[in-house]
Length: 131
Image (tube, rainbow, N blue to C red; front, side, top):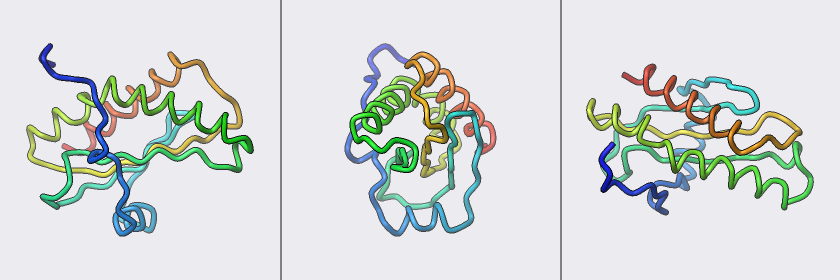
């Protein structure tokens, strides 16, 4: 990764298309678990979207308080922002695009370092499977 590359997560990289979200969860997608996270991914072919669009979901069933849900979402978002090149670089090399969703599976909050490890692992596995 070049030093000049910024670790950002722009609005354009966030998945907000209801049609794509519905396709992602209705079928045709694959998922990988790395407890307490699960990643759901699906390759797409659309020039309007960036290389990877991401969705982060922490169910209300897991944390009733919004403060805790937001904390977990912030941890996942930060870990993805720092390590997204693990997925985007191989996909750009192949000329592919994907939509991904991170889903929280546990009722507990984990340290940020542990969440980052799991996000890295999931991004690497996804990159391997998408090629």
